[in-house]
Length: 500
Image (cartoon, rainbow, N blue to C red; front, side):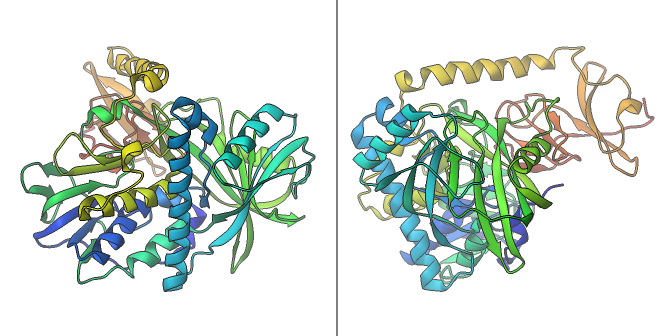
């Protein structure tokens, strides 16, 4: 298993598990940056809130992120400008800048120890991608950011062109969320860890079922990256995973800033993180659709090799990957879903830390009747067929292809004995697909390979030893329990007796 440096360096939020039935005005499913910031802002307004986190507060997607905060977005503001209009792009920039400033204000207000630091964002080209650099610069300047042309960086290789934007930021997101959770007004908010929601009974008063108790709420916020349950919106968000390493250097300087490459197809980024143990160099890149990794690629290994091309790496101390959902039109979906009083925040792509706080600001205003300048552009119910058509068709044809894998005969192995220690394979038993895993000590376990979300066949993720759904991004432990994604229920258990 892998662990992010953020989670390793963050303190525990010290929350308890839900043990008795409660009733609140707003129930928030998910204790990451979206859920905890929303809870904090609503509690400030005197709204009774409960947060239900399936694992540790801040320990899920938030702990797997890059730790970067910037006004820019991963597909560049000029793409939003061209797909929508100047007004929309300006509001995206404005909302993201406001979110970063709020994070900084909360950190200062409560002295949250999360290594927050203002840093420049640098977009560079080694080969001379001047058109990309120029277009990005022109767009950023148009929306009020100060941009500087550069021909050199603190990176240990030459560049041909680049731009630098000051006053962006980086921090430890898991430490921020854990710290903020301890500052939420307990008179109005209760936070529960290890309290997964496995069913939502919808009605005038929604009932959220956990293994130990129920929560009744007028409103529900699904702050779970992808909405839990089945929503048409899930056809417009596409799950991807991206990989990260944190390494110590034997010699050489650690670069100061957030560095993006303009031309690389793998979108590697670099940044430095300083702890009491010293500095770490973090690199992120090599993304693919969930459950559809290239079996011939070693993503962590390739990141390490790429890092060693330019740096004197001593040790790789941490490695992890994280999930993100790309929306079909390039903007996240934030607001009320097709179900009354159930609200979603999804489609953040790799910009989730900032968009998570944007979501919290929007939910606060929606629930208190205040006007919000950004709610309309991010509206979850929006319909943008012309802006979404190309990616929508491409991605859903990909999903259709994954469903076809349920045909008889399409399996990884015929015998349980083919599953080696530490491996997982799909084995077909009487025309049924089983997800079979053998632990390092040789113990076999099995479950149905049919994802409990929308019945797609899961695939084995050998990098992280999980079962991943290639259709909508649900992920399960080797033994079948839900880790993340839209699925509520674990994979159905199967008994292996005798071994085939």
